[in-house]
Image (cartoon, rainbow, N blue to C red; front, side, top):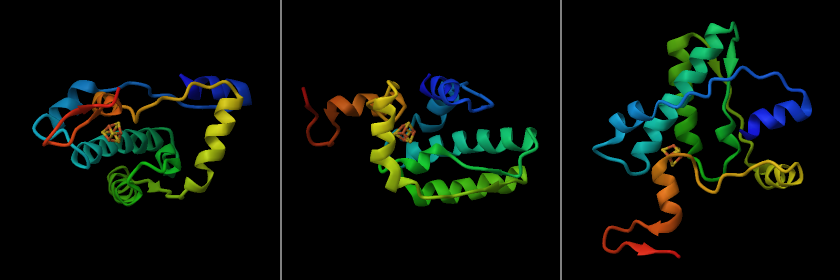
Amino acid sequence: MSLKKYSEMVGLKIIYDDSYDLEEFLKRIADNPVEPYRCFECYTMRLNRAAQRAAENGFKEFTTTLTVSIYQDHNLIRDIGEEVAKKHRVSFVYFDFRDGYRQGHNKAREMGLYMQQYCGCVYSERDRFIDMKPEKIVRKY
Ligand code: SF4
């Protein structure tokens, strides 16, 4: 995992929860596995877990690395972050890190860190290869 490797390289202490509740994710989106609906569910699951871990570990605030991405829906992330924060009595810190997106990629490349070519779920991996326009499914390779 790149984050683990990075934290070791720079001496950053991290509390990990690298579980991925695939079954729950699939259950939530099975009837409508398209964007932005599936991303809404995905953000909700991830941010809820982060807020929960923050609260359990005595932190008052939490945030997400999702906000460095130029491909993510920042408004949706902020809304969900604030919503789950209320539930766990912590605060969600939103900061738009998109200006550093390319710089981050260059740094990761320089450090020899793995960079995933898709967002994260099986659907995004599939979408790398095919254009999912309903009228025609075209393979890109
Ligand atoms: S991994 Fe990315 S594309 Fe897939 S549901 Fe989550 S945010 Fe959306």
